[in-house]
Length: 277
Image (cartoon, one colour):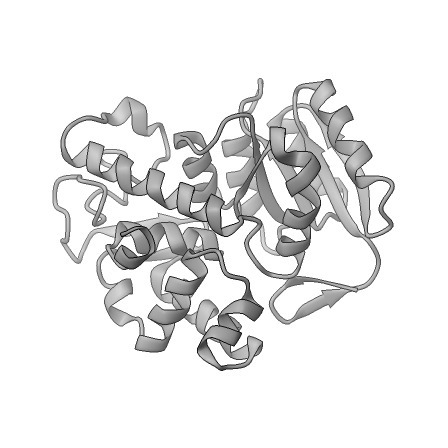
């Protein structure tokens, strides 16, 4: 039995779709999964368009998504997959450490990323964390992600990163629905009427963080440190179900669809100084 989202459990192995245009990468990942009874690879795809098709035709719990692919890249495929109700978890696969493509994949709905080079060690634990309702990111990987988000926001604010670097669909893109989000350095920062768009919904930027309760802020802070639900519960002396309730509430207030999006948004809103300070 495994948990695919807070409050939901299903029996049987975790059903996985592997998406990568490099057959050598797929052939390296499959042996890490197939010998384990807890996982079942139900489909493979070598571009984003095939990935969207595979999700529509196979009941999957997790999609391992390469980002740089022909026909349709992994970011657009993630956006389309996560736009549907009841979509599977999407975890980005990347050759390099955190870059703008990883952040854009998270903006599109991915729940984190895994380095291909670290797959032999990190893939199985990361998948287990995802299906348990946690982030696939270790605390170190979460710090790396948020450090990139912070440094990129500072570069944009100083004029060091332009629209081309932000990429289409980026929350920091000039003229996007998210221009003005604290930390992006776009004109109009802090204007309450500016709206932030995620796959999970929209909220007025600058207002979501202000509406968080003190306990929700504590939970968001802990989640941004890469702690699991159980670890957050132990730190705050509350039950795991209470932590999940606070996370769901914070995600709704901030307009995020998962805890990694929530951490990125909280960093951009200036709520996580202690995590990286």
